[in-house]
Image (cartoon, rainbow, N blue to C red; front, side):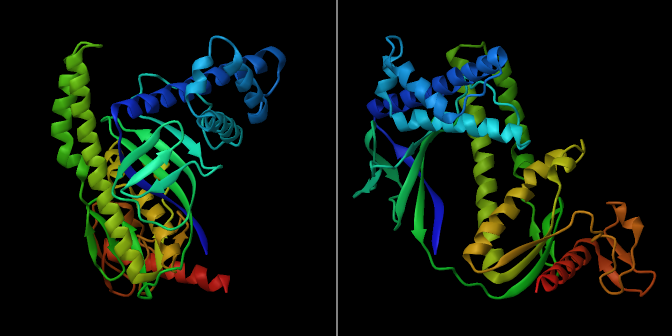
Amino acid sequence: MDYSKGIKFRLYSTKAQIDVINKHFNACRFVYNHFLDVRQKAYNKNKETLNYYACCKLLTALKQDGEHLWLYEVSNAALQNSLRDLDRAYQNFFARRGRYPKFKSRYNNVQSFRLQNGNKQIRVEDGGRVRLPKIGIVKVRPVPEFAGRILNATISRTATGKYFISLCVKQDIELGLNDGGKIGLHFGLRDFYTDDKGNKADNPKVLARYEKKLARAQRKLSRRKKGSKNRDKQRLVVARIHERIANIRKDFLHKLSLQVVEENSLIAVRDLETKRMLKDPIFAKGISDASWSEFVRQLQYKSFLHGGTVVKIPTEHPSVQLCSVCGYQNEAMKDLRIREWVCPQCGAHHERGENAAVNILNEALKLEAQKV
């Protein structure tokens, strides 16, 4: 089965190569901003909407005038992808999937551009090296080991000044296996999740662990004079702390999600409305730190690769309030402080998370049976 996946590597470039990469960042940002301005003026003046193809023609004329010959120093594919990104941003805005496009800042330390592999100019060579158009042969780690056709490559720079390349590769894969179990997951802040058997996954609370250290570093940054070298050094300190937090969280989520999908063929979760939940001023920070949505996203694509499925039950399902034995609905369970309760109808004793996970799994099995 054909499957496209992204594989990310760290770039170890020479100073000359870094200069060329930075030129690509600047050129792509310039093209994006320039044609965002062109499209805005065209609409405001003549009510004319310029699409991607119209902007490509204007880009050719822009490169040929005397002031913008420096655009020839970078890959044309990267510039065209900037126009594609701008057009996609407009489409998402009109489809109400995103905000109105805004200009990109040159002071943003996180930058990226994308290269298509139409003429197979992007190649992986021996010794852990990748050949890129206009940039040359760049060392990467770890050594790339994959079979498939490279569709495109995205080169990015993090806030800490590290460079990465992400290769989108189309492969012929065989679906993996799982142990055939069925599991219901109830997410929480005390424990990351509780399953239907009462097993709990500890919530790492990464942000809480680094919060004091981050606050001290940010206070120092706020006292540094803008534009000074000391401010730039302190900015790197803050960025490294954020990077450390993100890396620990990603490592936890990837390992836990892989363990769950390898053990189960059906994973039942509640469809969380995290955007609405993040409006709560008390729990917003903890919810963001837990990253339940990212965990569910990883469960979905990893389950597909392991021959399983993830079933989301509706948000309005009262999984916490229902007795998993007799179905009695206890509205007192809306109080988050109640962790255990006894059903007044059947006398069953319930732990909050485990009971909710059982109800989530039962509802998911009903939904799957209706599909048959």
